Image (cartoon, rainbow, N blue to C red; front, side, top):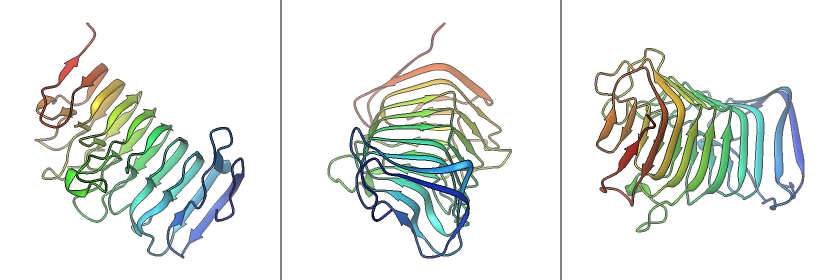
Length: 258
C-alpha cells in the first residue's frame, strides 16, 4: 500500500490477520489509472485481531477501487471502511462487527459508487452503529463553519443488516442515490434515542429507488425518514422517492409515481 502507484493492482486471497492497526492508503491514483485493491477468487478477509482505532480501513487518497473484500473489525475499530477522498468504486465489500458505523464517507468526498456492499453487525460499542453514513453531524464537521458537502454518491444493491439507522445522510451532503437496496433490522430493536430508521435523509437531492426496509422492531422507528416527513409502515418499499432541498430546516417535497 505504501508503494502503490497509479494503475497498480494489489491482489489478496484468503484470510489476513491484521494486528498492527488500521490499513490506510498512502498515494493517489489518477483519472485514467485507478489503484485497485482486490480479493481474488471467493474474496479476501481482513480479520482485525487488535485495536485499529477510528477505522479499520481508510481510503484517504483519490481514485481507488476496492473489490471483493470482507473487513471484519471484530470490535477493534469504531468504523469499518472510512472514505475521505474522491473518485472511487467499492464493489462486493462487506463490513462487519464494528463498534460504530460500517461504511462512512465524509470530508467533502465526491463521486463514489458502492455496489453489492453489505454492512452487518455494527454498533457493537453501544448506541451508534449506522450501516452506510454520508457526512457528519454538524457538531463534528471538520470543515466548520462550512458543512461537509460530500456528494454524487450512489449505493446500488447494498444491504444494511442488524444495525442502527441503515442509511444516514447528514446535513450538507447532496446528490445521493439509493437503488435496489435493503435495510433489514433482523427483528432487533435499534437504539431509538440516536437512530432507528431505515433511511434517515437530511441531505439535498436524494433519490431512493426500488429499496425496502423490513423487520424494524422499534415502535418509534421509521422506514423512510426525511426530517419531519415520514413513512412508517414496515416492511416498506419505495418505488421511487425524490428528495430535494436547500439545507437543514427547509421544507422538502417527496414525489412518488402513481
